Image (tube, rainbow, N blue to C red; front, side):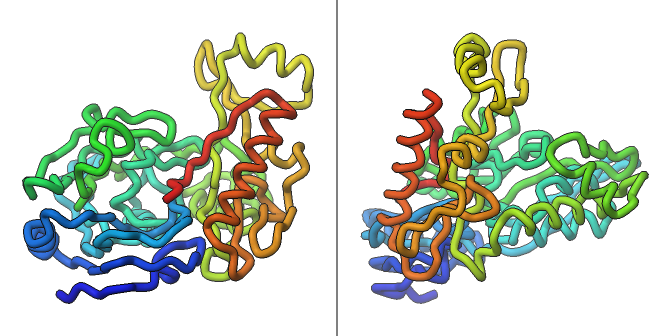
Length: 337
């Protein structure tokens, strides 16, 4: 293990932003991670996973520890369910495809989401009607100060919409090293009610969809709307879909009756942020090398040499205009650093 100085993070963030780490090291085992933390107790640290959910607006004046722990295995199973453990450094989409190849159900709607397994509980990632909390059992996490490992159960993670204990009470205290999911082996709960999945399946004459069919439909939809980070720098959805109290939403909806929304509870509705951004006139807009994607207004993109500050400026302009137009505040889903 060797700590590198003045290390470029351009290839370690999906926006492709050029930023430097004061120091950088990749760890490939729990022992290496523990050793690095013990030997650098006084050093400021920054934990890096797949680099898919962050916008670098400056150099990182810290020791950047890249979590590159690999491996996945079945730890328990019965006739109906299987408990699968994945190390934090596994690519999420590759892991999803692995579960589908084994006919394990529960993650197929989250195919092609960028990033690594270790960050999935932090954001409680989700797509097309499913979230991590639906299949998450527990995760192991190392305390950055004591190097002790703690297991967090589903309940202890305090999951919410793109929220968890790791973004709040336990923020910057733990490094997730592995995650356990409980998946179905039979009687799979096929969820095709959200978004364009039904339309995509019908287009391919699929009437009794398998896990693979659903995954393929999600992949096709995402590819049609979302740019590949390898070809066009982005972090997927940049903004959260705002959730409003029905009492607050009703007067807005009266003013804008065409506004789309989904009921999330008896008292709340979710409004698609992409619709708001598109109606505000930002879809496909470009500001130098920073811009809003032409197919999906939720996605901010780097056309080549945009700085993090330039992309951040676009996001602020979007938020301001949406609020001035609709009276609805939209929050960034991406971590701005």
